[in-house]
Image 1 (cartoon, rainbow, N blue to C red):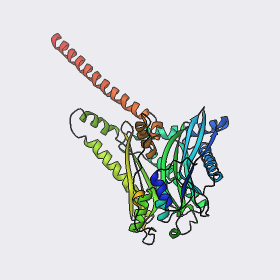
Image 2 (cartoon, one colour; image 1 turned 120 degrees about the horizontal axis):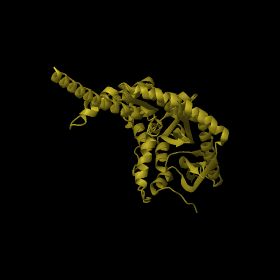
Image 3 (tube, one colour; image 1 turned 90 degrees about the horizontal axis):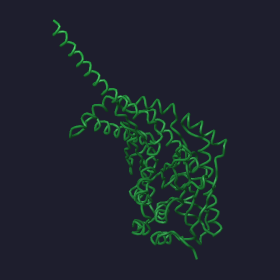
Image 4 (cartoon, rainbow, N blue to C red; image 1 turned 180 degrees about the horizontal axis):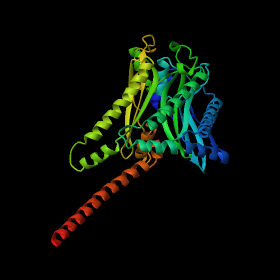
Length: 425
């Protein structure tokens, strides 16, 4: 008897593709960075940018956990694992890398595969022509660094984009995405579907992680390089519907714009906030930042020959007083009239949302916070920003009011001296 985490809808959908649910499978790896690795990563955190030692440790730990999970499924005679997740947890001062999913079985002989897709999404992928090969990932561990952080803080005195921050985070995201595509190409895949973007703290640094299912579609040709691998963060249902309409995903596109309100505009906005009504300086800044971020998305999509960007998610976060970050992510698509799905229509069970009947007290609130941090690669790094910007603003305001007080005192003193001189005359 198997203990499965699949819903009734998932079981029904997979049955139509000749699969049956199997046992829950788990793989883990507990490790430590060690003294030498800790000292090396500390130096890189001070300098800023990628911390290679942490990147390698996380990547090796995650891959070890996934391999053990796949081996456990193979012992049960499974042909694949669905709903694969890769997590990291703190355990007695060490780090545990955990991978888990649900094994599936089939009477047909086929190569073993692992996928991040649920049973419902896997049905949509298979019907749309995407054959899963392996759960794939790309990651990078990084830190802001003292020098870059101080330079960026000084830039916040002027209004507009803080390119020191924007450039760093844009490079980080695309590096992780390129590593995901490279891993997919190594296993013979020409696409990565159901991509997921997450960010997590790790050992004083931050990990940016992109995961997905390395797959192969016969109409996409052979991926001879990582650059040729198609990427998409669309759901299985969206992917199927696009194929029905004659479109196909091309690439996951991402952009970040970090804007500063500026010292002058910040002071003006502060005084205007004392009365009721719109604050034009802030309104215009947020509007300009959004437009700049979307423009970066458009330019990236045009450079790869896309016709549209769909599923775009636009998020804005206040990183520090007067410092805003706008992040956009979506999927660029192209015309593909010859990539129609196998079935004439998508079955109802593939679009019905499963109801979660289990809830831990306080979980909805915690999940919402995790979603915000996971969905926005800038949410967590914002905590690494130096507090110098906010402190400087406070100091300037104190100095300004102190200057006014001194001016009043000098004026009163001069007035008294003038009255004294008049009386003497």
